[in-house]
Structure formats: structure tokens, C-alpha cells
Length: 138
Image (cartoon, rainbow, N blue to C red; front, top):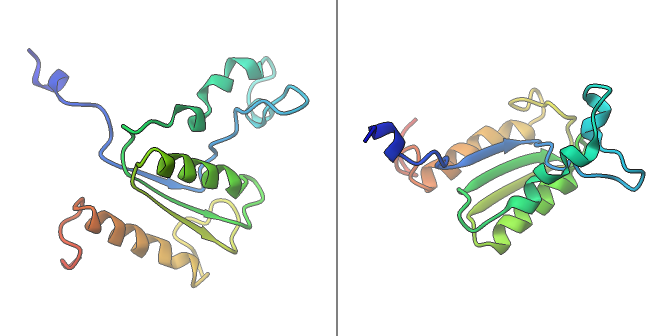
């Protein structure tokens, strides 16, 4: 009867910036990136089930992803695979892979290409009707 319980908790959209989507994948040596950064008693098999790529469904919200090919901490390939999995399930996805930039570029800093991603996001949100019309003013 509570009105809050009648509202879906599914987000209307996702915005992922250089996401670490494969950190819990178990590697050939039985470890994971996640356990390299976690507590010393971390067991990779306890976290392997949380790999987002394995959880992609057609019911996922529209997703905007940006990453840099030059990200030395989180490989861009995980974002690429996730975007492709979303597309295969016909989930609206927009993916931007910028050539340069390290992990944690924020709004792009002084890189002219990277500073475009917030505008690309705004256009995507407006185009999906999430911020008003695509031709509306800021």
C-alpha cells in the first residue's frame, strides 16, 4: 500500500564513465583485479558472479558509456564488450571511445576531444527525452 513500494527501482538510464566492468573476472591464474585491490582475505570466486556482462538483459535501461583507449588502469575492451552485449539485446546504447586520456579524466580537462563527452551526453539525454527536447535550451 506504500506508494514508494509501487514505483520501480530500475533506473531510467545509465551513464558509465570509464567503468571497471571486468574487475571481478577470474583470470588464468585464479585471481582477479578486484582481489588485488581488496582485503587480503578476498576470494575471487566469491565475486565472479557480479560480472555485469553476464547480467545483461533486454530489460536494462538505455546506457551511455564513455572510455578512453589510453586508460592504463581499466581496459576499454570491457566497455566495448558491455556495449555490444547491450546492443545484442536491443538495449539503446551509445558508446564513445576516445583515443587519448588516462583513467579518471573527469570532464576532459584540457583535452579538446575529451571535453566533448559531457555535450555528447547532454545530446543523448535530450534525444531520449530525459532532459527535455533535443532542441531545447540549457
